[in-house]
Each structure stands twice: as C-alpha cells, then as structure tokens.
Image (cartoon, rainbow, N blue to C red; front, top):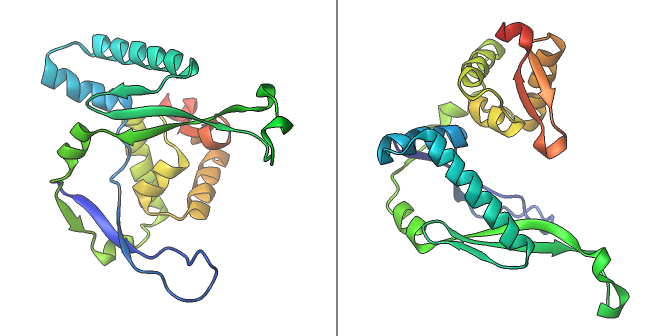
Length: 201
C-alpha cells in the first residue's frame, strides 16, 4: 500500500494576499492504535500480545520517571524524548520562581533508524475526486465499521475517515449523540466518541 499525499498551500503568515508555495502533505488512512501495533508485533515476534503490552507500559512508566527527573530519553530505534516547560513571560530571571514554572509537553526527535526505514516510502498523489465529501449515511457507515474494531474515535480521526471539515465533523458527532447512537467521553483535546451502550447491545 502506498502512502497518499496531496499538494496544499498554507495561509500567508503575514496576512498578505500573495499565495504561498505548494507543498506535499500526507493524507492519512486513519490512526493505528496500540492494540493494532501489538497485534502485528505479536505476529512478527512470536511474543504474546500481553507480554508486549506489558513491556510497553513498563517502558512508558520508566520513561516518565526519568523525564520527570530532568533526563532526556533515547530509544535507539525510535528517537529522542525531552521535556519542554512553560511560564508567564518575564524580562528578568529574578521575576519568577520555580513554583511558577510548569511542564508543557514532551518533545520527540526522530532517530536515525526510524528515518532510514521511512526514506524509501512509496507515495502516490491522491486523486482530486477523493476530496468529495461522502453523504451522511456513508459517513455513519464508515464510523460504525471503525468503532466496531477500535472502540472509540477522536474528532480528528473522524475527519480523516470521512474527509469532513472540523465544523462538519463536530456537527455529525453531535447529531449522532443526540440520536443516542454515540457517547462522548473525556475533555477538550482528549475527547473521544464511542458507540452508545444501547447500540452495542
């Protein structure tokens, strides 16, 4: 299977009407989650899925502990992880105390091995016709099929699955919640949607 891409143009950061140059952007087929990776790794390695999932959790816990202590972490086949911080803006370091500085995010820098595996990726341009929004019934069919396998979906995943804009995706999901077909869980950036218990039953 080839990765798909389309040529896109970003808005001019200066606000001027002059068009920016086109650049390629991957059009994802969807999101592969932990259970999908575990299942494939189990078939390749001969290790049990439970052992692989357990090992992944242990590594995540140890990484979190070391990052929390102020270390950077390198996973040789994947890359480098480091912590970024945030604080209110100040002009002098004496204006702020340690208590006012907080964790912001974990940064990732791809390692050589992973880069080398991706340098020869096959690419094909996505046909223009694929950008046509499928009808609502088809979008619901794709969503239901996805949730039967993955159990939950984010708004971003739904947009990738159906080609919807953010506004249309949120309207679709809201409509399905109101109809009792979906349930909403989580908050803001961590919000996920799943089939309601009445539909699953």
